[in-house]
Image 1 (cartoon, rainbow, N blue to C red):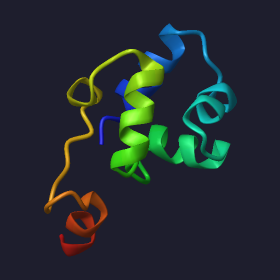
Image 2: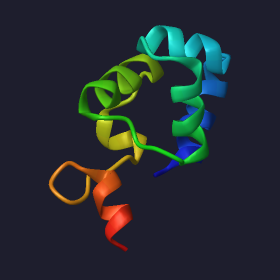
Image 3: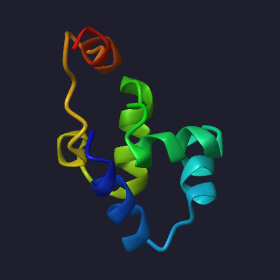
Image 4: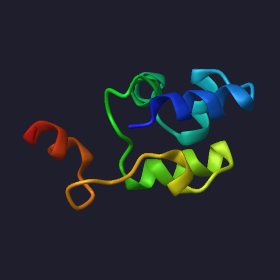
Length: 77
């Protein structure tokens, strides 16, 4: 996951992690895990995140793997 990309976009908009989480309708801890690369947002949250950050889903760099289940690909390696 392009965690640095999410953080850079958030900081460019002068948003805190709390504000990003609020706008994406997720817990702050969830947004933090995206930034740290610990977890990838699901497709609905990926769309929300892109909208909040003002970029396309593709520009987030959160490409789906293993037929839309990025976490299962990580577990398989």
